[in-house]
Image (cartoon, rainbow, N blue to C red; front, side, top):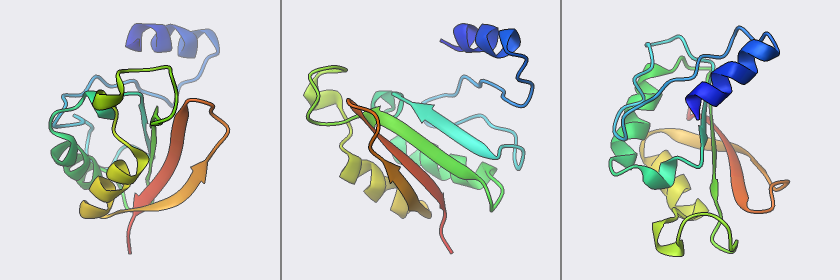
Length: 120
């Protein structure tokens, strides 16, 4: 997926996006260099979810945003229901590490779309 994204970014000449392959307990981001961390259909795969979010928050500047898009509970698409992380559970994990919900979008038919920032 990262190779596909890199090709697309090159084709449209976007130079301010860096795809990063993380571990499931560490985003492996350079400290203070990321304005937006985008997770798409990934959080439900992680075993170290809270550890990942804790390290993500620690690596972000104060003004950065975290966007999480993952499968909602009702859709017939995506991973088996037992593998999904419900929106409420993700938000609970996010609050534990100091993230607060800024915006929730509902334009995706099969996923939730959440924008978060570090809490004050």
